[in-house]
Structure formats: C-alpha cells, structure tokens
Image (cartoon, rainbow, N blue to C red):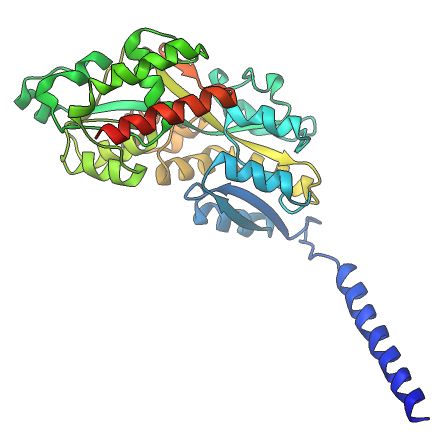
Length: 363
C-alpha cells in the first residue's frame, strides 16, 4: 500500500509537470489594440539602432522590439545557419552577404506593397545586383571608405593628398592611419596600382603587398573605428583612410578635416533590412521596417549614426550640418567614383588576410 501511494504521487507529479510545460508551449503572445503581436525580434549590428526610435515605435504601435546584436556579417551568418528558424524576425546584413543568406534559404520575400515607404530611398541604392527588384532587401544605411585630411596639418607639412601615391610622401612619416579592414586596405592598394578594386586576379592582388610596404613608414596605426575617429578629431595624424560614418563624426568635431583623394574610387556597401525565413511576426516586421523608412524616423537615425543616408525624404528633417556633410550625403563628384563592394571568393579573402598580416608585421 505504501509503494502504491508513492507511485500515484509520482504519477500525479509527472502529470502536473507535463501540464505546466504544455500550457507554457501553448501560451499566446500579447496582442496590441490593433491586433499586432506585442513583440518582434531584431538581429542587428551593435550601435546601429537608436533607443529613441524603438521607444517611438512602441509608443505608436504598442510593439516592443527585442534587439540582439552582432559584430560581423560572419558572426550573423553563422548563428542564423546553425540556429533554429524563427528566433529572429529581422536581420541587417551587408549587401555582399545577401547571396549567402539566400543560398542557405534564410530569407523571406516582402509582401507586395508592404514597404510603401521604399520610394523614399534614393533610386541609386535600389535594385542592386545582389537583389534586383528589392525582393528580399530594403536599404538601411550605407558605409563608404573615405580618406580625410587635416588641411591645417597638411598645409604646414607642405603636402597635398590627391592620390594613393601621395600617401607615400616622406613628409607624412608616422602621420597616416588606415582602417583595420583587410579588404579596405587591399582595395586601397589596388586603386593605387590602377587596378579594379573588385578584381579577383590573384597576381594583381599579390602586387599590393610590395606597393603598400612603400607606405609603411608613414602608417602610424591600423586603429579600431572608434580610435581612428578620435585620432583624427584630436589632430594626432594628418590623414586617415576610414569608414564614412567615422569620418562624418570626426569632421563634425574638427573643422580642419576634409575629404581628400576625391578622384580615387570610393567603396560603398549597403546594410539591408531583411525578413528571416520562419519569422513568426512577418506583419509586425514589415510594419517596423516601413516605419524606419519614414522621413522623420530616418532623420533620427542619421542624426545619431551619421553614416551615408540613403533616404532622400529624410533631408527635410535633418540639420544643416548633416546635410552639408559629404560623408552623409555624397556630392555628385563623389557619387561618380562609387563602386559597390561585392562578394569575394574564400581564396581571395584569405589572400587579403595574408597580405595585411605581413604589412602589420612589417611595422
């Protein structure tokens, strides 16, 4: 009788546990007054989304955006490939990772007409070769690589910087910084050699090492984005080849800074908002993405993160300083020199890593 009672108790406990688990699995998400799910899940770059924007979206629609961040496209792709579908609703990959995402069946096409604000985007950044017709992608922000110089320091040194070759001027010893980006550094060398920066010709890429070695006496550092921005803003170096968003912030802090080497090719990559396959909140995700393209919202994002603004309609809501900053809105003479960074083979990327490693060791 005692044994029988214990078995009954165990059985009842198991039933209670199972009931609890089943009730948890079947528990419905909250619903807003407009019938939307009250949460959606964003997988995004760090320092790439304003809390004020998220708060405004929640205020208007009652939806909380739960954000998780990553530091690289590779990290994002690896997690999405290995993870369970449906964990995130939206991601923000760079254009040259779109093919990898589609090949792994990770993207969901937008519903027709769902992104009514797409027309606010400058047409130059729509219908890219990575996604003709913008079936899977909505442009978010752009990143360009710019060379900026401190005009006062350059004048004092008696140096003019119009070409990559000019960065080898012996008067610039220990006065140049290059972004810590393998592809960005190699592309700069390819431009200096007169080659197409998109080439995958291994023999041309191999020439970059000897060419860039001639510049090493002038290179002070290969800093992180934040450190490079600070060094230029403080006037610690005369020239820097850095990302456009960092250039914009540095130029805002130091009025002696200006874009140089305007006639050299300028790389552009576009970070895109995409819907992820298996999303449980597609309707809410499309609502949020359309919200981000509103002129007032896009302006809020650009003011906080002064990368290349792709939203023409946002101009009416932006400060004159932002509008006049060529790192945020490219003037026509810079637009003519833009090339889109494209996906490269694993062999080429490995070759680039080896070249930059040798350059850094030479310091």
